[in-house]
Amino acid sequence: MNDGVDKLVIFLGKRAGIDKLVKTIQYASKLTHWHLRNTRSDLADRAKKWELSSGLARKAYRTGQFVAAFNDLRRRNGPPPSALSVAANAGQMAYYFFDHVLWLARIGVLDGKRAASASFVSAFGEAIWYVCNLIADAKAIAAGIRAEREIGASEKKGEIEKIRAGRTMRLMGMAADSADFVIAAAEIHPNPFCNHVITLGISGLISAWAGWYRNWP
Image (tube, rainbow, N blue to C red):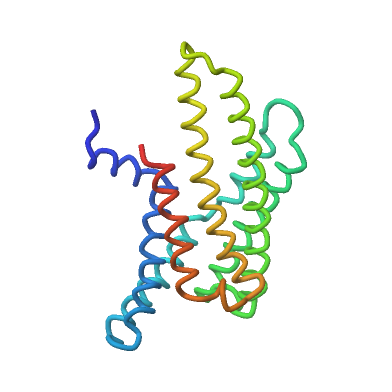
């Protein structure tokens, strides 16, 4: 049986695993900078640099993700996709594509003036994606609860456990999407609550840790 180190290697072998690790570093560094900014400016500056470099690293590592989102919609089997599914995929594609533009603008490959507009469009698409995911997960959880009530019989305990495990994963997904929506909202419509360092830091860590749970082998 795999021990903790084996599982960590498997986890870090996934694109999502690396992203969640670096995301944890990014938002932990953000909170560290905020905490030390008035007492240890030298350490605070280092934390800020780690935060910024982690954010850029995550953007670089997401290169090409919008193609995967497009292909998911293009190659979907079964009945025609619902409007909710199409909206989710469209939001995801917009998010990843303009996130690439934002990354290139911030590192100087593209005109830096493009950064603000790219950031807004990326965050807007991201928010649409999260809202659609939340609705889809809520529907799936409700369907699972109904199915669990209908099963009821003890001889189908395995099916009930499977439904409950799926529900836990969806709840983790909803936690991550809700937290990420707050971060996106801070970009779309800046306000004192969403843009506060503590709000952003905690939201980022909630999203990262929910991702750890969902992707841990």
